[in-house]
Amino acid sequence: MKAETDAAPSSRVSEPALRALPLFLALSLRSRARRLVGLSAFGLVFLAAGATARIFTGREHGHVELDMLFEIGGTTLVSVLLLLGWLIGRFPMIAVLVLMSGIFSDDRAHGHARLYAVRPSSILLLYGMRMLMFAVIAFAMSAVLIPGFDLLILNEWSGTSVFALIAAQIMVYASLTALLSMATRADAWIALFLGILATVWYALRRVEFLQNTPSFVRETISVLLPPQGALLRVEAAFANSLPVPADAMLYILIYAVLVLLLAGVGLARREL
Image 1 (cartoon, rainbow, N blue to C red):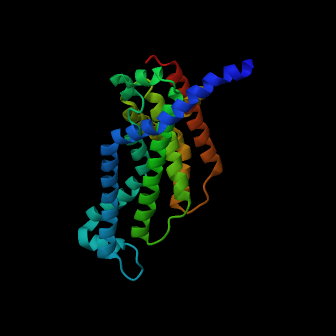
Image 2: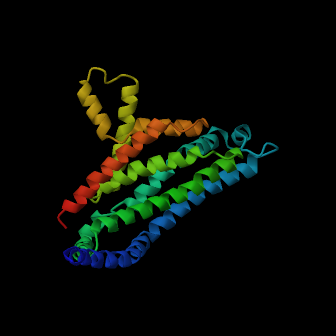
Image 3: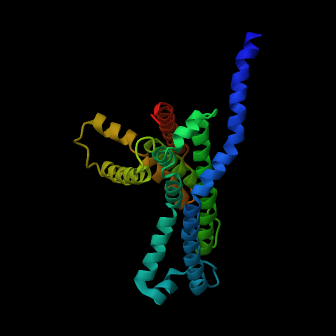
């Protein structure tokens, strides 16, 4: 009898939370409407550039001919196309940073987080589902854009490894932005800075520039920074049509889970 009495309040708490969740997500999506439009326009520019290059240089083989592109616009036009190809591989990171920016810190700054916390719902559930929704949207947009661009330029399917590349970037930068959002409204900018710093750090390690640094310092910094080495391995597998390195994806997954756990602890203990 006592067990039934104790169970009743939890069921009453969970039901309002589940009913409020779709409304919360709809409001979250509405608040990101301009960002979604901007990302969509950004993606359409890539596709338009690829389609234009295909129209003017695609011949019997169907793919873009760099020699013909060079004849039309010289090295500048070829360089622009190569830059677009490099940049589009970072679109998942760009999309998730744009959508996740201020995922918690904006609500705290405007006083909304306090209102959510006093209602009979789990604040961890609300923000966890918000993050998941933004991550899924970023994945879906990237899953359309990157293969579509490759199809226009190369006239061939880029392979299923593209989805691993997209998922890897989203896992790393979504979790990192969520953690940083517990402390600052500049979460996305700091996450981007840490990504750049991780790239430089990884390059320095590869050329053994840091060999005189104490090993525990090198390893500690490497663990704390985003797993750039693992991300580059996944990207290289995609670029060379090789199998996705399972150990690299596992490392990325573990990193993202640990960072999300820290974000969850921070959210549960954060003063609203």
